[in-house]
Length: 412
Image 1 (tube, helix red, strand yellow):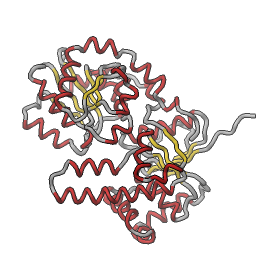
Image 2 (cartoon, rainbow, N blue to C red):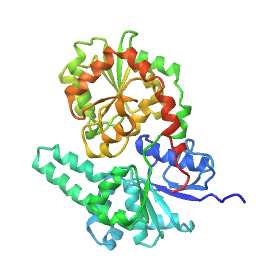
Image 3 (tube, helix red, strand yellow):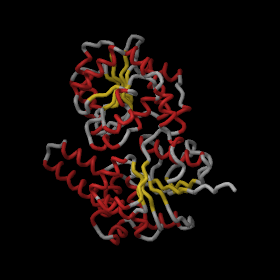
């Protein structure tokens, strides 16, 4: 008799209109499960279902929470009794009760940080019986990193309050879950150190991986040519590419400063920066102040489908993340994406990366947050570009054979 496949129900307030590491992980998990025949239901704000597997059942939420409401909700949930949160967010609670009214769901998986908080809140209000968190990030680490990099006492005080609030909320949300899905053993160890009682909870490790569709990703030659024309890229240019979020921990400004150090010596080198985010204005200001506008190109946010075509322009791809605990805990999707290009890749020598990359098997490395070391590695990659392209020409094959969601076990 054929084994009946386990059903899965997931919840995400995400609209899936902007693509990034979080949505890539969600697509990867959902589509892999549905592709293997599991009944999959997604409760979300997604309007466009074209990138989801056709067998996925969609239940619309039709309720958008603004960033201000998100901050308010999570602060209240961390610090005040449940009835206070319910009073402030009674419309949202009533709306979600209707969404779940006829679903008869015993167990729901919640994807992102706000979703995890919603899962805890719904269980406390007896809307659902059980929830599981897929932990995409660690908010406490981000707030801790930001407060350590601020000089203003006011800014430090605000970020300290956010850190303490996030820490208290994490304790509630993680402990109350049936179990949590961690992106690495190192992430689990981090949380257990903060909340020792989690050690006795069920443990599931699911690393950040690439979606099944990564194997189908193709270079659009017409798009490549249009990029060359749009950004005035000449045949003799050497293109250094960054694609990702301009986060404080993302190290984009470090990359620009490292590039500045070598730009005079490598006159044909240009830096192509794809994306946007928190540090975007600071990066533009540095480029303007140091007369680098002719050598540093900002493209803004771009569809994920265009990534392979941008990579085709590149001679070197850089993932310049600053030294931070989170990057020691997980592999960033942009690193795996970069390896698909078969181009030389430079990434920080984080513990998570070196587990995959002994003896620079897959990529070059630099000491995170060391701008001089990054500059030296950029120069090395430019000088020895042809040899390095030959060395890394089989990266794509290796990544697709072992580091996609299609290779992970069926059930968790």
